[in-house]
Length: 433
Ligand SMILES: [Zn+2]
Image 1 (cartoon, rainbow, N blue to C red):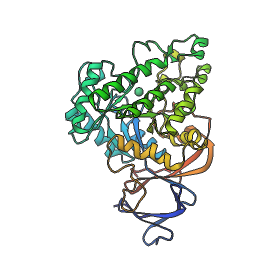
Image 2: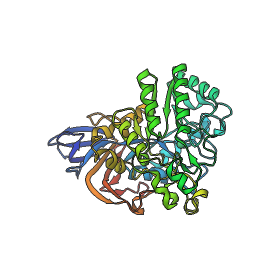
Image 3: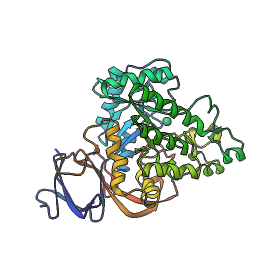
Image 4: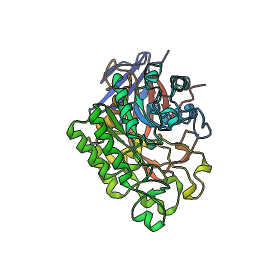
């Protein structure tokens, strides 16, 4: 049983304000003077209504690394950030490389209740890159896995990559590649360029990403299968995807919020909150990925939410772990980098943060337009708000956000998942109570 909710005066993707009635987990009515009979009335005047956000790239850390994050804490962070579905990366312990582990992940998400958790399966057993995992068993399991990735590691062996691409064709699956040549990035600490040279730290060159993307485009074309490029970060990578799409290759690509906003200049302070893989790049790369997202070369924004306990970050740069939490800040960073710059409007944001990731990951019931009869997965966002991002904005287990203390626009006011609220007027709902 869910209550009826009537949002008064929301802005539905560029149109005039409208009332949206949610009942029995669906959008029941949209109009200018919808009757409030039996419904809880919510003042949504001026709030942007978006389809519930969908993240194709989240690290939930459970099972195995519960000190960093759990499915419950990670999905609470997701809801706070306006997400109603997250795809969980398989680099857990045990690795999600079998039907049993992906079904466990799915069940943990269902028990938590804050967002749909769609497991991603590992490409290779134990993410070791040596032999294919049971892709078919994961696909036909209750978790209905369609996205496979060894994220954290690159599927480097070209024959294994080819076999994986061939295998997933049978059920329209997709291989999501973490494009990083391991040999070219041994010991790498940050982007290879002027900053790494000045600091005297080993660089992570753009070519280590681009060479893998180029190879995988050619493999995907040869096999006639679907390739998805995770966290694309360089201007050259944008060019490669643009070229591949022109050729008609079935490739999609994602960019993270941090690669849309931050640069390697931030490494100068040796603050490990800015250490991430792939690394923050140059301003030229930032402008290129923004342009790529604006012109549709890059399909989606994905967070690469990567929680780490404080001891993994509060240490010298070289010893620190890679990764940033990103769920709570994602839409606000996209607002700043893409909407305030005029590169995207809110209907584009709905596409790159909801409908396109749901489509790429073949996730039903999410990313649907805000129309009568559609599932009630909604985010109501105050685009006029502005505030300093603070630890109180974080709801996961870890606090390794690069935005703490930074002014960001916007505020997630309401999140509706399966017809019930997970965020009410900016406050995370305690579902257990
Ligand atoms: Zn990755």
